[in-house]
Each structure stands twice: as C-alpha cells, then as structure tokens.
Image (cartoon, rainbow over all chains, first blue to last red):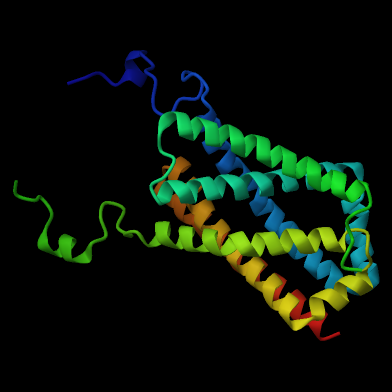
Length: 139
Length: 126
C-alpha cells in the first residue's frame, strides 16, 4: 500500500495548485469570476442597505451617502463597478461555452483577454461618464 | 458493458452529486435573466447619480421601476445563493461546517431578499 504522502514527508502537488501551475488567462479569468461573484455578494448587501436608506427618508439616505461619498466608499464603489462589469461579461462568455462555442484553447484565451479589457474599459468609462457630469439623467 | 448503476439510481437520474442538473440549470436561467435586468440596473444607477432622496423615491415608487428593482434584487440574490453554494461545496470538506455555512448563506439571502422587497414596498407607499 502506498504511504500517506503527508505522513511520510513527501508533499505532492494536488490539483488545483496555484503555486505550481504557470498562470494562464483562462485560469485567471476563472478565478476572477469566482472572486467577483463573492465581491458582488457583499454588493447585494449594500444594495439592500441603499434601498433601506432611501425608504428611511432624507436623513436615512444621508446616513448612507456619508459612507458612499467617502474616499474609501468610492474605492469600494469602483471595485463593485468593475466586479459587476467583469462578472457580466465573463458570465456571457460562460453562457457561450454552455452553448458549445468558444472552447478552442486559443479562442478561450482571446475571449478571456477581451473580457478583462472590456470590464476595465466599462468600469473606467462609467466613472468618467459620472465625473464629466453626464450621469443623473433621471432627474 | 453492464452498468454498475442500480435501477433505482437510473430512474432517479440524479447522478453522483445526488441533485441532478437542477443547480446547474437554475444558475444558467438566473444568469440569462440577469443580463437585461443588470443593464436596466446600470442604466438606473447612472441616471440617479448626483440626484437626491426625493427623486429616488419618486423613481422607485413607480410600479414598473419597483417591480424591475425587486426582480433584479431577488434574481441576483438567488443567483448569489447558487454561486456561494458552489464555493462552499468546493472548499469546505467537513460535512458539519458545510451544513452550517450553507444554512447561513441561505439565511442571509432570504433576509436580504425580504429587506429589499420590504424597503421597496415602504418607498412605494410613502
């Protein structure tokens, strides 16, 4: 019978082992899909907080905006914006895979790079759109 | 080759995970539903930037907007519950801890759904 590698001192690489594999675009995009999904779970709680603050009248809303307008609040908001854009784009990539398209190694790498580029462009674009005074059109 | 599956196992069609394709399918259905809902949500969030509480209440009190915001919140949170379940299934290997965490995730999801819907009703009835 084979020795238990943990007991006999031979620590063997297990799968998935991030410190051993060479980084790939497809691997990073997969990890980021999960990471952004978890970040957006926190975002869902903030969405509930935002809705409750609006339902609490002007003072309630101000109490939310104090946090949202802080520098840290803006950093978190940018994080949510990018996570949202990434999870949205990469989710569509996943749905194409589910339909059987884009599984080729090189295609998957290219669409992975496209998702990264697109998500950063969207996130920066959204903040630029707001800071140049184009947002708030539902006034 | 003779199958090693028992007739009962075959009839149930649930496979090795004991839950069939239900989780996978619900994850895709909510994902597809979230494509238009997310675009609407992004449009609304950008449109409400730099406004005030009065305008937000006015906007969210409109039946269509309240309905779409509720649909976005509920679908997102359901999708989140399915996604976090996979994370827990992948990384938590003790049955006890797994049950506790899955229970906690569901509690948080249900409480957050209830909170969002209640807040929207409250906004609409002011």
